[in-house]
Length: 103
Image 1 (spheres, one colour):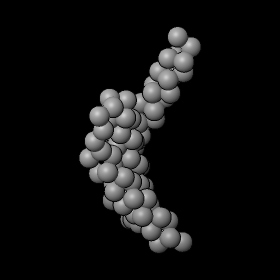
Image 2 (image 1 turned 60 degrees about the vertical axis):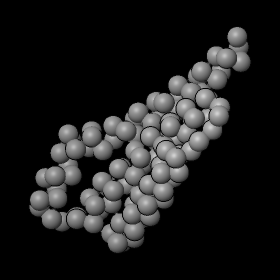
Image 3 (image 1 turned 180 degrees about the vertical axis):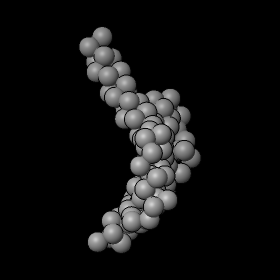
């Protein structure tokens, strides 16, 4: 079962890494689209980091060194920080769009 979980995290990491590269390289003459592409790139980098972190965690279950490393709250915070920021940036873009429609 651990190998299936590990494979899922690795495929997620690979696809989100691919997506991040695409969005970092995205070019548009429209400023809003460029901002959106950067936000999506940051969000996909965060998914990449999170998937690698938890994929390696699932792969190393039962090893004493792994439990000490992966269960450290500081490492969890670092792994989840970009995901938090990516989600927050998407929320900001949505709120800006909703506010612009009202005005």
